[in-house]
Length: 309
Image (cartoon, rainbow, N blue to C red):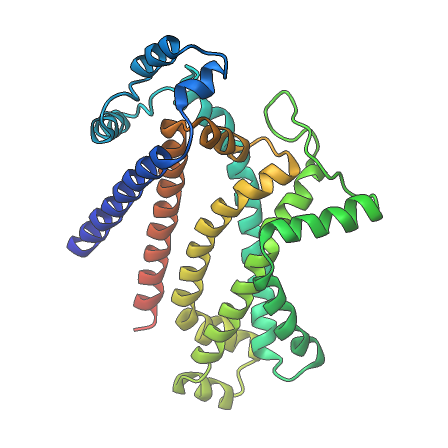
């Protein structure tokens, strides 16, 4: 319990430090928040009045303290254009969560299947192809994958829509509009996690009790499920937990390419406006999600290690 509390405090401290860094980074960006809101024709008097209204004329440390104090009570403040940041997150985060959650589910399923197949069928033709294919998948960033998917499946074949049309619910109006964004997010992560699963299973398979199980004539599937996977699970789960953060970052780029109705466009616009409250709120929300996934991963790893003692 004490170690868990220390770990939680450490992660919260890292998140607060990251948020402070976001405040500094946005403050260093060229431009002016008040001018971005009022437009180029605004007079110096109007800009000064808007700066006082937004509080951007105060020292950076004071602004960060006021914002983080509000976050502690559940209030993320207001945008530079006067909208509640809480309402903005409620509207835009669920579609991003749908996109990232679906991509994560596809990544977990595909990585486990391909990684296990690769570990079991060493030397086969199909598994030999996984070596270069997964390397390429890891090396290619999400925006390149997204562009290639649009060129092939939308423009050349015409099977799937290249952009997302938002319905009244705020989500994509048709399920097929999710396919290309999900694949653009999942393909690089499948490449990475497949290699991790394969390596973890291969290392666990070298344990003496696994060799004994094989010599006893136990089937490959049973050996893999009962004797190899529990030992490999901590490494695999840690990789999947790291993937959550990668997907949240990649989703912002993918959403922009596919015109997806999530946090990507919101974050891009807020950076252009130098709207620190929105940028920091998106980072904070992403950090909470990642911390939650890491906590789940820690629990699964503790359970798997206890089961193998």
